[in-house]
Each structure stands twice: as structure tokens, then as C-alpha cells.
Image (cartoon, rainbow, N blue to C red):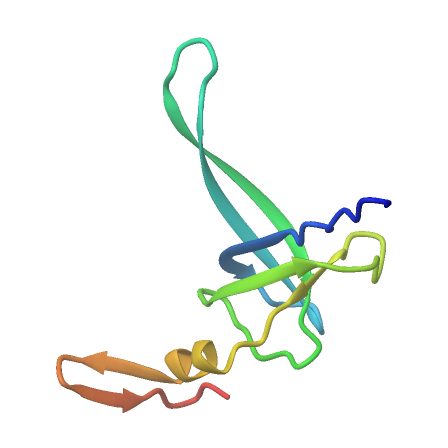
Length: 105
């Protein structure tokens, strides 16, 4: 009987650093890595061009994105739209009160 191998979905979470181009955001992902020889822990920063067809995210937002087919020369990632994430982005919590942000779509 042949064995079936499941494909692992590449999923990252990062902060939007640029949203200037239409339907594209630049997301910076920070990962901690341990040096093999010296065992020092350090940060690695990497930027990804992510497709955002709804244009919902702006600079400073935290987004989750997954790998997809190539959309352009540099875009191979797609934003995951999560309703809980959108609700969290729309309101600011001040103690027991939540106030909607103004000016954010």
C-alpha cells in the first residue's frame, strides 16, 4: 500500500512595515536562533512581500500569512483573514472598556 505524505503548510506571523503599494504589504518576521558553536541566542529579521487583496492591513498591524502559488516576481505569500484578528484590530482596550478606533477601515 503506498504511503501518503502530507504537505506542511508554511505559516508565519509578523508585523507590517510597509503598505504603500496596492494589494501588497511588506511584513517583517523576527525569529530567535541559537548559534551552533557559540550557543548565543540572537534575532533574525526577514521581510516578506504578502498579497493583501482586501487592503485591510496597515503599518504596525500584526498579520498571519501562508505560502501560496507565485502571484508576482516577489509575492509568494497570502494573508490569512481571521475574524477575531479583525475585531481585535478595530478596538482598543482600556481596562474594562473597549473603545473603537477612529479613522481605521
